[in-house]
Every structure is written in structure tokens, then in C-alpha cells.
Image (cartoon, rainbow, N blue to C red):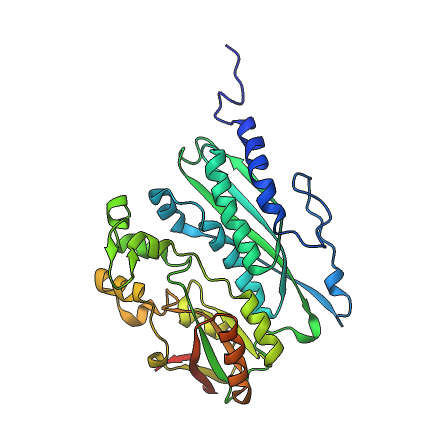
Amino acid sequence: MANSYAKAGVNVEAGYDVVRRIKGMVSKTYDANVLNDLGGFGGFYALDDARGMERPVLVSGTDGVGTKLRLAMVMDKHDTVGIDCVAMCVNDIVCHGAKPLFFLDYLAVGKLDPARAAQIVSGVTEGCLQAGCALIGGETAEMPGFYGPEEYDMAGFAVGLADGAHIIDGSTIEEGDVMLGLASSGVHSNGFSLVRSVFKIDKETMGMYVGELEKTLGEALLEPTRIYVKAIQACMKKANIHGIAHITGGGFIENIPRIIPDGLCAQVELVRCPTHPIFDLLQQTGDLDRMEMYNIFNMGVGMVVVVPEKEAEAALAALRESGERVQIMGRIVKGETKVELI
């Protein structure tokens, strides 16, 4: 009997079905700059927003969701990991004051289930709506024999626009500036290799209700990464932001120094940084070193914004009006260590 693509494990019709299922939801992310519909060989996006800018600069970012996807597979809940995928990209580019314009996603599966793929993309579209960017394209790859039938991986790519005359890169940070910490929604999408070594990732454990979390353990761990784009954009209109750090893998220790100029130190007052309860549970369950955790996780602070002291109240007000839980978490002082946790 002749061989075929279907016998090799690839269902072409399922791919067509995915496109039919997602077309409507994806179109909700479009704005006037999107020039073509889903299904072309490329996505077209006009740069009308660049008009009036002194020096338009494109800012890009790419990332994935990591091993957090294993939880989604165990819990058979796939409608939030797409938010994580968008968040990891757009939160990075907004650190430079860029407005996210468009997003593309890549989904690789062992066996293409159109209903599940549509759930995943529904999260991507929700993330794009939260970030105010358009989902203009993507790729779904069916890879039997490479991934198991129920396994998948995903990654994304975002492009934003900034005025080169006003890019935020930390170079204007100076002694006396104030650091504002924006609360995270939980673990976000980093450190899950350690999370999975601490907790048994099965349906029974993930379904366990935890009083201090006010939800099941699985629900708390699968909570999507918070998207800070619109809050940062609102803050930019009210305050002169000197630097922004997205607290991802590497925690405080790696990410804050990325924006601190030589000769200065970000002095973080840990007592002013409320810890998300999921991290207390992680530490107790895994007998983890508390200070090492600040080198791995966000610990409850997903984004750090550095502003002049005289503009701190205006920045705080703008962020809170945008729905963020935010507090002063430290100051910029002279020093050579870049970051100090006290």
C-alpha cells in the first residue's frame, strides 16, 4: 500500500480546520495598520504610527513559555499559556518605551488537535488585546515522532515602535532616583524547571486547594504572566521614566543590573517588596534558600520602573489608575555592585 503524509502522522485537513477556528478571534486584534487577512505568506503592517517621530526605531523581542507548558498539558487547560507567550515578548520591548505593534506565534505539536490549538491561540489573542497589538501571522507545525501526541511547544515574536529621541535604556538613571515595583501575578513564565522539581506535577497535586493561595495549586501556577504594556504607556505620559526592568529568569539579581549605569547601585528594600504567597509555599515545600530565590524568580515584583524622586507620586498614581499594585521598593545610590538587596 502506498505511503502518504497522513500515514506519516500529519493531518493536513486538521491544519485547515485550525485556521478556520482561529480566524475570527485573531481578527479582533487587528487595527487600521493591518493590511491583509490571516492566511497570506506574510503579515503586512503599516507604520503610520511613525509619522511625527523624530527618529522611528523598531524594537523587537522573542520568547517562549518554557516548561510551564507541562502544567497546561497535565491540567488539560490550554487557554492561558498564549497570554504568557505574548507577555514574555511585549513586556520586554515596553521596557524601552516601545509601543507593541504586532505579534507572531509559532506552535509545534505532536498531533494536531484543532480544538486544542484554537484554545491555545485564544490565549495568544487575549494577550495581544491586553497589549494593544495585532496578531498578524503565525505557524502551526505538526511534528509526529518529535513530540508526543499530547505534547506541544510554543514561542512568539513581537515588534514595537519607539521614537529614537526618547528611548528608555537606563542611561539617564542617576543617584537619588526611586524604584517602583509592579506586582506580579505569580511565578509568571520563568523558573518552572525548579517549580517542577519541588512540586509533583500530576492531576492530584495540581488539583489540591491551597488556602493561602485561595485556589488550587495548579491554578496558581498556571496563572498567566501579567502584561504591563498599557500601564507603562500611561505612566510614560505622566512621568519621565529613566529605566524599566522586566523581572524574568534571573530574578532581581540578573535583571535589575541590566539597566543600571556604572558607578550606581539599585538598593532594594526587601521589606517593601510584598512576596506573592506562591513563593512562600515554594520555599517551604522545597526548602529553598530565600536569597537564591531572588536570583531565579520575580518573588512578587514583575516589573521595576525607575523615575526621578520628584516624579514618583505622579508615576505611582498613573500606574495605580491603570490597575497595577505598585509601591516604592528602593532607591538608586552610588556603588559598584549594580544591585543590593537589604
